[in-house]
Amino acid sequence: MARMTPEARRESIVAATLAVMHRQGIAATTVRDVAAALGTSSGLIHHYVASMDELITEAFELAATEDLERAAAAVSGGTDPIDRL
Image (cartoon, rainbow, N blue to C red):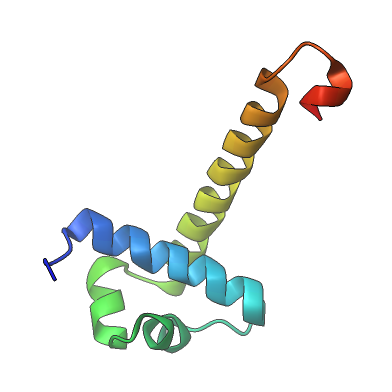
């Protein structure tokens, strides 16, 4: 298996953070939980993000972007408002 690029690794960390937060809640999510979900160490997570606050912020940005993309796709198809919903 090829090594992940730093950008791809960071994206996987953010996606895993979002999944863990969804499962456990924001307050209960730790860097250690994210590392466990990825099968890696907390140190590796800290190599890519400075703090849990940064990780939570990026996870929310990812969720918002995904939601906006889904909403845009839903309203762009068809001319009937019911179809677009």
